[in-house]
Length: 165
Image (cartoon, rainbow, N blue to C red; front, side, top):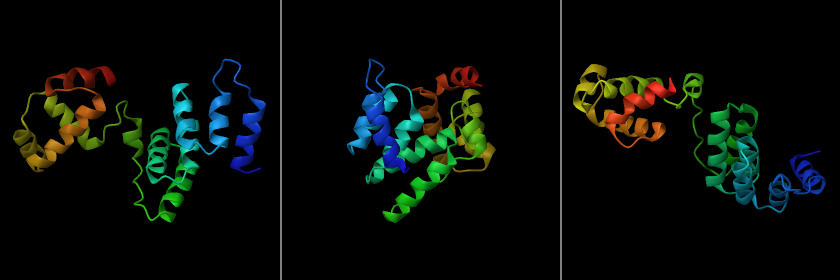
């Protein structure tokens, strides 16, 4: 039985019954992939959300599915998503390294280095000098670190790193 068959069978077999589980299957079966993904996300099921998005024809939805699957380390389905993206003529996203996936905040090795130096109070120029990269590149890393740690200022980086380590 293919993916569509499983979705149809599940949507018929799982009445909502207050659990919220039947609705995502029904939405998926009706071809409303984004809505199904939102419903899965609302009940804490990221893999199922990505599964729903992977059936859509929307490149943005497929990229979102890839991001979720990559974060989860779900390589078989993420491989199928990359095939679908390639067929649409879209750029294939890079997989994150195992080390990045394992970091609690999803920081890359370089972002970990930059975060530590930011936490020590160094400026972009000082960090650039220590890491032998441009200040502009440091700025990009700092922006990424702030976003991944969900903090708004450099002074909050140190405490955020300590709580997630």
